[in-house]
Length: 110
Image 1 (tube, one colour):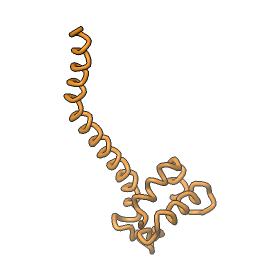
Image 2 (tube, rainbow, N blue to C red; image 1 turned 180 degrees about the vertical axis):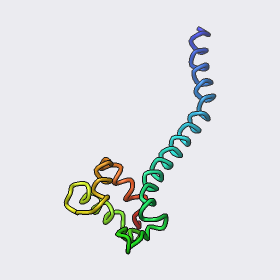
Image 3 (tube, rainbow, N blue to C red; image 1 turned 90 degrees about the vertical axis):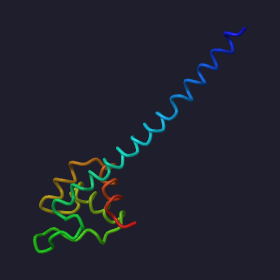
């Protein structure tokens, strides 16, 4: 009879002992997810600058005034070919719709 009570006690001890590691793993996954999102958005800085102001005279428009929704609309238009451009249609086609949404959410005004 004692063995029956021992097994649940061991399981509870193991669970309680591992729970801090589980929390740390969840936090690490959240950090990795945030880093991934920021990394996707950072690719835009090559042309548009870290402030989103671009070089208007050089053909790189201002993007820091767009909402997330407006930015996503433009990115999808480039991807589908509905909006023409020099490099943006090629770049946009390299991203999944989910990645474009992530970029728009990271860079667009909330």
